[in-house]
Length: 218
Image (tube, rainbow, N blue to C red; front, side, top):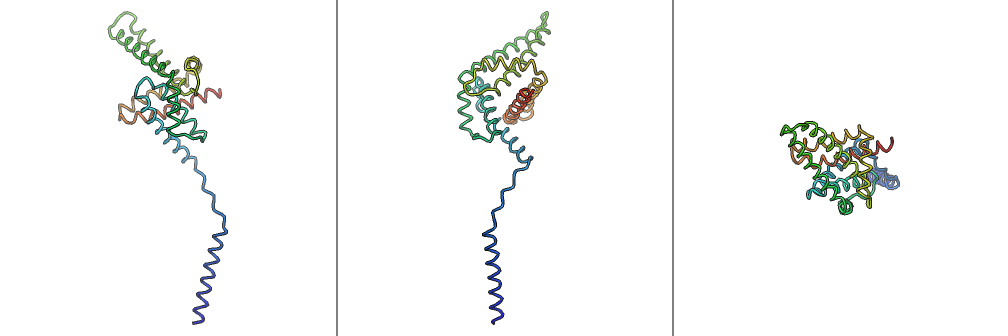
């Protein structure tokens, strides 16, 4: 009986000692995220941002402002700042004050491109040349518009942003081609599966931010 009591006391003493060791043992620091985890989290944030951009661009004239707000959101994410729907909505309202005029100009440019293509189909003299020039000019305007949108900051002038974006579009043809290629992915995604076009917008904006940062480093 005494042997059993001694054994029980030894077990309890060992258990208490282990409990005390755990109590005094410092908490382990959380494991840092791997590069893959960070990259995947950023990719998921881009997809979510694309959905926000698509919803904000439903009035059509607000597309430039939606792109600007999406770019501002991704910049905050990269800077580890507060980045929620509230900040996105605030940026959207600020960018849309004059940004709707940019959206209107974009739709007018699209209508002019359609008119050029009608001339080409009609077989009028010089129609092919006019169509080629119209398509190239429209693609250049698309690249410049995207550059201006991702460069937007609260209080910035859209006119000044567009002038600077046109210069960068001409001086950085490689970046402009990348932007045009990224924009082309949006309708291709919509053709493959319409819902895919929305999240792809966020990836395009992220690519435009990278192109602008690359150009700035040069």
